[in-house]
Every structure is written in C-alpha cells, then in structure tokens.
Amino acid sequence: MIIKNIDELNKTELRGKTLEIIEAGIQRVLPSTIMLKSIKFDKDKKILSIEDKEYDLSKGRVFVIGGGKASGLMAETLEKITGPEIIVKGIVNCKSTDYKTDKTEILLASHPTPCEKGVAGIKRMLGLKAEYSIDENDVVLCLISGGGSALMPCPADGITLEDKQNITKLLLNSGAEIHEINSVRKHLSKIKGGQLGRYFSPAKVVSLILSDVIGNDLDVIASGPSVPDSSTFEDAYGILKKYDLVEKAPENVTSLIKKGLAGEIDDTPKKLDNCENFIIGDNKLALDAMADKAKELGFNPIIITSEQKGEPTEVAKQRADEILNNKYSGHDLILIGGETTPKLPENSGKGGRNQHYAAVSMTLFKDCPKDWVIASVGTDGSDFLEDVAGAIVDKDSLKTAEEKELKVKDYLERYDSFNLLEKIGNSLILTGNTGTNVCDVIVYVIK
Figure 1: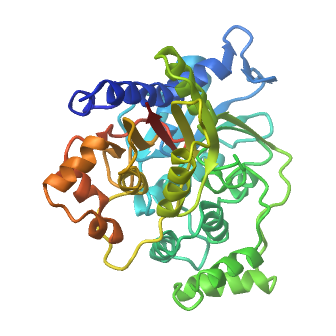
Figure 2: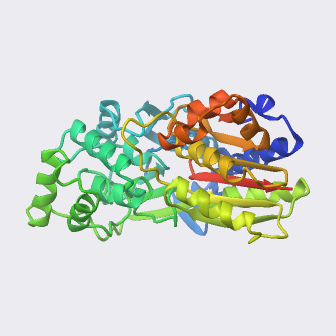
Figure 3: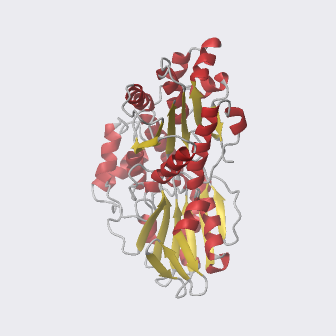
C-alpha cells in the first residue's frame, strides 16, 4: 500500500472507500505502471517504441539523463524495459536514491529549494557529452518529472546557487503560479528552457515526461529542459514586477535579466530540431483511475476538472458552494485535480496546500446534513512536509475539534493546518515518497 497509515485513518466505511480510491489513482501514475504501458522495446532489433514513434538504437549508443521526483523510479523502470545492457551511461537527479539500477546513477538533490548536490549532478550529466564524444548517431533519453526545476539546478554565469535559492523562495511565497516561477528560473539557468536539449545537439534527445503542470505545457514541466521556450527575458522581468520582487530579488538576478532585456545575453532557444518530447502520464490519468475505482465500489462519480488552481481557501469555498447547492446532484463522489497556490502570511505555521484545503473544507461543510468525507492529497507524497501527502476529514473531525476546543479559525488564518489536523487525529495521510508526481487529487464523498 502507498498510504502507510491507512489502518489508522480507516475509521468508517466512507473513509475506507475514499482511501481506496486515492490509492488507485496514485498507483496508476507510478512510473512502473505508466512506462510499462506506454513504452516497448524489441531487444532483437533494438527498436524502442514510444506511443506511435520508433527509434532504432542499433546505429548508435544510448545515454540517460534527467531529474525530478519520479526520475529515480523512471530510471529503474526503463532499465527493466530495455535491459541495462543497452545503456552506456546514465545520470539522473532525484530527491530519493532508494532505487535499483545498473547503468544509471541516481544522484541525491533537494526540493523545493535547489542545492549544491543538484548542481554537481547536472555538471556530471553535461560532462557525458565530452567524456563519451556523444554525436548525431547517439540517443539521449531524458527522464523528466515534476520537481525537476529544483532538482536540476545549473545557475547561469553570474548567478550563484544562493541567488537561485533566494529568488525561488520569494516566488514560492509571493503566490506566483508555477508557470510564472519557471519562466523566471529558465532565464537564470544554463539548462532550463530548452538549453539542455540544445547542449546535447546533434544527438537525438528523447524526453519521457510525467506532467505535474496544469494544462501539460511542455515548456513549463521541470522548466522545459528539452523544449523550445516560449518565455522571454521580458516575461521574466514582468513577473518580478507583478509580484513586487524587482527590489527584493538578489541583485545578480535583476542584473542578469536586465542584460537579457538589453540583448547582451542570448535568450532561450525557440526551436529544437534534435528534441522530441512525450508526456506519458498526467493528473487526468490518475483521476480516470480513481473514477473507475469509485464505480467499482458502488459510487456514481464525476470528474470536475484536472486543472484546478488558485488560492486554496478561495477555491475550497467555491467548490463547497457548488456542492452544497447541488450543482453536481446525481453524483455522490466528486473528483478534482490540479494544484492550488497558497499565499502565506508572515510567520506562517506548519502544513501544505492539501492539508490547508482539507481543513478549510471541513469548516465549510459544518452544516451539511449528509455523511461526507473530503480528502486532498499530493500524488508525490509530500505536501510541503516530507511524508505527509495531505489530509482526510469528515463530520467527526469537526466534532473532535470542537470537543478539544481547538480554535480552528486561528489555525487556518496562520496556515497552521498540520498542527490543527494532528491534534484532531486520524487526519494526516502519510505515504512518504511515492516515486511519482502529477499534481494533487481531491475527493468529495457526499452520501
């Protein structure tokens, strides 16, 4: 089981079924499931098939690079599909190294704040080109997943890792969306925004991608290291202005972006003939699996969207209003995917967007006369806190909070959902690193 504390959380029939549905969704988007369904390899002919494309690997050599929260499990699964003997050398950055590979090194890096280990890993990846004289006959398989932006750091000349760490924290706390954060990070990097693909030219770069981005924009997932970049230095500067960060950002950051505006630095590539990119898994895939499981368990589910975004409190209020006013009447189970973006107050408490969403929703359903369960979970298993994937709440959660005289409103105002839910008990969903990352999934059960 992916959910480690399922026995503790499984206190009612509705809770148990909700957790089964979440489990089914995450299981479906594990690389070990997705890659076996979407990738085939003919070992005799050395033909790699991805969707409707075939790659003849007999004419050159195969190298593996990449990064992201799922890259370790992707690398392990890839070697099972092709056999390790087809790979000359592989290096990927991941936040966990607990995977078994023969030819691909899984290097530890950090998320959401980039670290020196991540930089060292990227330098080793880039070093493969000269070390093995990689040329037009070779294929570079690039394994990309959510979290890749932080796990694959390679600051541009004139930018320090500390500069990137500081601007990342400022952007994360500003309420900027992932698209905007990545637009800035691309222009402070040597490899993001298509620059990694350009670097390995003329070799063919084939990227296998797990999407954690709403809309599956290729140039946004992990900041699009092998995808032509549609954003510009002008866009990056505009984002800093939008969130009032021009003066707060490190001086090196604003200086570099202004040089780009002045044409003193080449922008990211707008065309990459040597790169091909495949999205092999996304949030919708998880939701579809959850809907199938829900039907199996006797529910009549509806998927509202896989592209939910916005501030967690406001979005939770919107969904509660829709559900309590019978917008989805005829359905007793409602599924939503996406990723909200908290705007944290100063001296914020402990927790993540999924814990906060569940806790807010608990208060909004206070007067609902029916039995209900609400769960919000990050598919990567880390809702800002390691091991805590999200939370599950119901009528009893609210009753317990009242019995313990917890000042729920105060906890929510300071974004201290973890401590609130921990005191309520039977609420925090623990998974640890799942090995995948396709945004968040939310389940409402209304009986």
